[in-house]
Length: 464
Ligand SMILES: [Zn+2]
Image 1: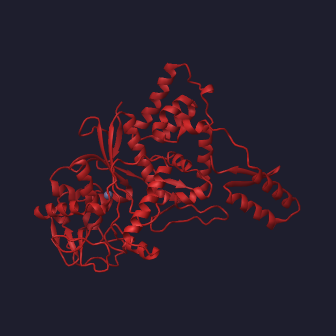
Image 2: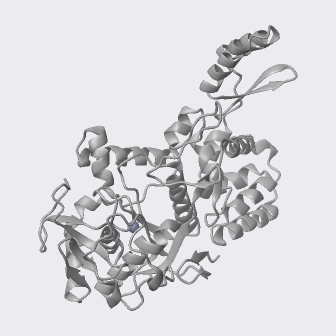
Image 3: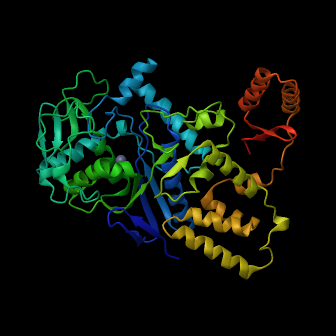
């Protein structure tokens, strides 16, 4: 059955036809490891994991590469702002290398808790500086670079189809987002740094043919994707925010160095909105309403009593090309939905013993998944059948540990919790509101949703 994917380059859904039959070569832009990943960033990795799993489910051998950006870079994609790694190193009194290692480990702990399959190759930028220098030398030999006091630049005016992914109108391009330290030495506003020079305060530095310095951000993805997947490969993914600058520049420098088409299919995941607003990683946006927990990272979600798979399941409720609005209400609903899925039992499987009905159902789910990763539709179909065996098969894509979790039975509330509930009911009866509120907060702190029903305090566990 063909898999169709929406290609940002053509703005159309296309049937996926890999360059080498039955092998899918996939590159995903990885994390910059100077802080914990925000749940919004993690949404992108869930999308890429679904892509990986759908391709595998359809029989493709997936070669999945994701870089680790451990070189300090600027807070803006457009080469200006503060160096994130160095800021973190100062903040935490560590070296940039210690910062990078710490947050790389934290990132992979998060992704494993979300059942995200680890890409086979996860190259670190700092270990591929030689490859980056070689690529810049190829660009230099082909006449696409110039050197200023600030660094080695890519000359976008020499690249005829620069901006084709984002369909940029170059005359409208601004120099950088905050315009504070716009570089005076570059020739065109859209030109970007391949190699930074004369940055004495920068801690991470390497020798190069142009002098000591460090690589620009964009060049690392070109160098590492080409090294592990070849000069032309199948799919390149990232967040939608990568389209106008990062991926645009990756295409320009790769194609001008190799004279080969860089990538066949470009795929981009949409934003997670926090209470209706966009987030950015540099502002770990937090919620401020009443007593409810503040969620910004996966760990804060776990600390608030949620299961990481509730968040994975929530991500699957929206198509990857749609914005997803995050709220605790949505997370609670996702937890309830997941609890229902885990309550399915083989003894009551409506499709049991009916091979034909099973095949029809299976085809419907697979059709939805293969239509540009229509996982929300696929999950809807799975839930409409309520079939244990169907869920068990498609957990290979959905990834919620279905068989393992579905065996566990509902647990009773612990005695400690029952005692707090009794105390709170008593406090409310005698109108001791402060005491009642304190007991409520204690229950919330233990991972429960607390409500007031006709019979007194009601609690619902946020975990599964
Ligand atoms: Zn990248």
